Length: 393
Image 1: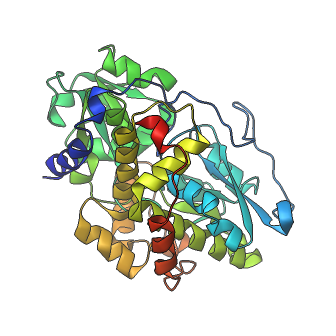
Image 2: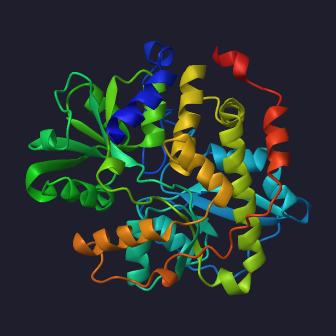
């Protein structure tokens, strides 16, 4: 059973960490904010504002590098973006002539920012991508950032909630009301009616604590966030959405116009990001170190940070070694069209979009390079010199 599988995988990593962690806060799906930090990337769309179109090409950064912005749908001060930070700090983006910054978006403004060219890339859930395309936004997925259904529910170990059926009549903590569009298909596939069987409560950055304190029953979460929470001492168990709906999750999305206007920028970003993902897989400790160096305010024991990196690996490569090796062999970032078809079917079935969109209008593998030299990244991972590890032990 997938729930048992993922719980056992993560539990091994947390034998020490769960005894020593400390509680913090978070926002937005596809990444966590247990540090309670703010956006330190140097920008971001202000909450409540409407993005305005940017007609200029991406600017030049320092040293004539092309400046590229990727927006994430929550705070940037997390461990979940370790693959991006790895690509930044190990020089993979710079090798491609890119200077990359990560910015925070709010709600569903990440796709709007990309559509208006205020950012070049975003990492939304497939359902938000479908909704954007249905509403006429020029968006396309170009890289598979998360290869599994990363979303699920976390409950206190003493809650008595062990199955999806047990969730009937319970209160589910969301960071944003729009997150219901992400988890509703899984609830429906599990035999629940989201409108009748559960009550969604938008708890924002306090959602972890409200579930931990028993004020709310269930935390809507995802694999990497749950991994980090366990490492920080939250007494949670995970109920896995992937065992109910084994489809895909957040892709890397760009403005479809860039595919013809600046295809090399897209190829370069995707190639460097793939290297960053592989770096995390080859040395999770190194990825933890460089991300904690970037965000020293994240309070977590070392074992917990490494466990969070394993959560990132599970999201990007799969839950078992066979699945992970298949992605390494066939191409990091290659989209599984069968999974995307399942995403589309459930988006229509649950009313997220009105009708199916041809997949070739949604996602492409044309910009994923499968020929780059893995041995260099393997050497980088092996020879990494730790910067802050000693401070967390």
